[in-house]
Image 1 (cartoon, rainbow, N blue to C red):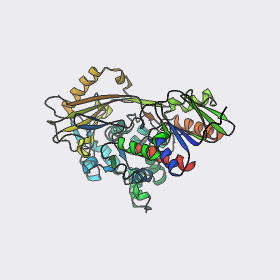
Image 2: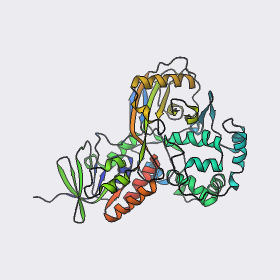
Image 3: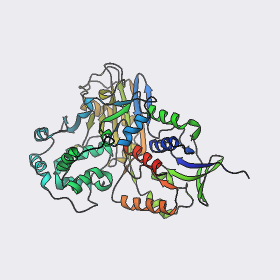
Image 4: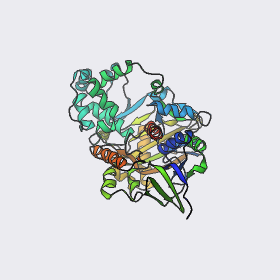
Length: 451
């Protein structure tokens, strides 16, 4: 029997986390192999072109919320081109009653907005003077009602959470789901006061790269994925693998995929927690089930293209619909309003989202049922006289976004325990460290640096 080929690292999953880790390991001269079960790389990040429209499935945009995300795009410059959303993206709509209202961005607008009650407007003014919470497992709705009031929860935080997590503030725990917000209260005593103080703190040139700008890539996010593939080398990425098994062999790991067997000093798993089952024979049932204690929201995305838009003026990032409003959609994103060349001139590209944590049954509806709901909501909300889109695509995500609730601490502890017991094994992906594109890039970079 011949000697099996040995690698410094085998990365399971060719989504953004896995490709980022592979990119930086490869850049450091490490011998790597990436194994992906899908026939294409990028995970849910896929750009589509149809009838003159350029649209995304999966995330439509990212936010440059950490330096690692900005630096990756700098490293890929020449292979793909960063696109910063224009000023329109700073305007966000929230539905209340029978119309959209702009989410206020400052104190004056906050006092004038019809979104919040007068009582809560006064509470917001007094927010910097309230004591920090003492319960580390306090849910987001509890935290916000305590500091800002119920109407702020309903018409600012709830739609924000629907837009980010497709989630429920009564389930999410800020310490895990929104650690930056949690730390503002814990470290500075206040959301508002903490944000002001953080803004004034001196930043290094590296930290300044985290501009918080909304971003995409010219021509679509798939161009970033293609750039990563090219830099890594397509021969190092195995796509369409359906049979994967990892076993321990002395100080190394043996990785079987399709009809191949290789060994590796390190194995990095970057898939969803549900993908752990049956892959690692040396992990016990309790270990895997504890790590896979995640609930994922189920989401439907409907991409709509109109070559001649006749509805309301699209001058915002999009609109979010609070759960209390009892509508059939979570929100509407307007990519053609703030990104270039996403729709023909005088046209419009919309992405409508349905389902989420509180309405998982939506994913069981047929395409016709979904389109009936979308037509009703888009016509009403966008003041569209007729609903005749020139492009329609429906995407369904059974495991769209992981929900970081109270069980997260148990999951994180088990991941740490497993990694300590099995040196060289890294359990990454969106089961920990955040869900946004910038979070995935940051984690991939940190994994590469740690190896």
